[in-house]
Image (cartoon, rainbow, N blue to C red; front, side, top):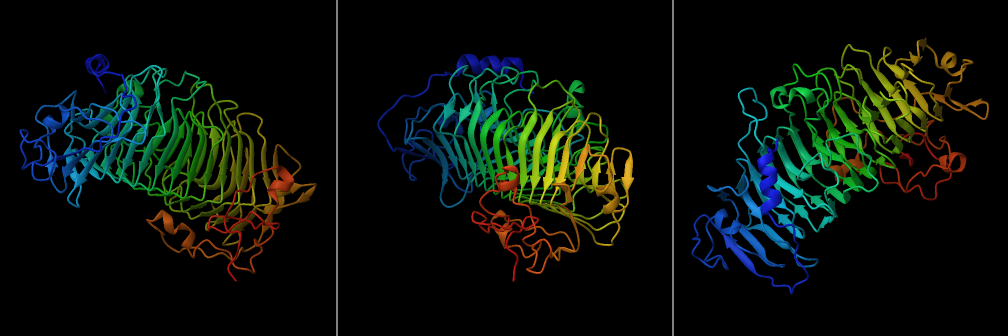
Length: 583
């Protein structure tokens, strides 16, 4: 959506040279709509008036630019389509800071780009609102334009930019993204990236395309030896009502492969922490003619060493017939972990590992889902109506996935075919161990391994299965089994169904677990461990009956369970996400 002229202007006019070490100045500047650009701007009594004055000024490391809280700042003269253009860099320990004063947040009006930070580093944005006029719930009469709250661009071919922090900011009413991190040209992945980017305590609401996007390459044909975006943290943010684009905003050639409606989307990144975020009510707008990629609350692709933990994700809506995932690892995600998350009441799976039908060279592999809760998912998505999904359209591209010690509760909410656990197509070397798997409906497949396009290695061991009405359905390929015994005891072993050292390792019994009867939204990721629901009591058959995964299989059990109980010294593990049952 960025025109070629705009790219050339940025590349040629904005200098890519960065500030060197300089003495800390600690100067402050104030900006108020009641001020004057003829003032020196150095005090509340003599503030500057306009964004044009800020854009035309030079700042030094340690400077702080403060906008009057509770006031709206608009620019009549956009700088490269942006209202506020960041023109200078800070240095380590002396960043340039943009913030508000007076106890409230100031608002930057974003008719196109709210804030553009191109080729700069050691810049911080604190307690600022960026607001546009886009109405994501009524898109049919809108015109497509590039409308971003805060746009971080690195067009340098070598250097990674450092020291960018975004804290306690609010973004709303933007057509494209709240926060976008990208090279100048999305199809030039050799451009320099970012290191150490921090996004914390932000509120994002009513966005058209994607809430937070770090997207370094639109091409899936590039295999990266080093990742352009490294050491990123997204913490304690609330992201809601990112509706997704109405289809007319998406070029025809990309209608079947465009992600839209995601709360957080990360690609081409290494070492990412996504922690204690609340993501909800995203997707669902204008997909009446699109068939293809839909939204996820949190999604990653072409990345490695992602830790996604202590997040609550719910009410993510599917596009026509697909997706609506809570937390999703896609093409090329490697050596990454989902843990301590609560994903519930989404149209698609609560958690998923999946590769699409393209030629991207890196596998979705060596990833873990553990000590998480998945409940009441699969509300609507025809292709992915399940709680946990592991699948691939490509041969051997979803590989070595370990799913253990999760509590998974399926509640049927539609008439389509549903599963609790689903493994599809060519996923290989997949293991499910020590999971507490519960279904409320006899027509829901407890385990659904179908269809198998290639020889598959799936292992299920030490899991507890419970159907609340006593009826069970298991599927492998074209065969359906209506009792646990017939499924577990069959002679075919392409799927290892609860066999360990020649003996049955699974459990069929009421786990005596506290389950919510209705939708349970916590809306505070710091309260996840305080839930009284999803806990087993001391008399539960799941208590102390889990496999010791470290001794038996060399799997790292982690430091604690979902509820914060330490498991560092545990010898007897329980089944599910709760390791220390209540007395």
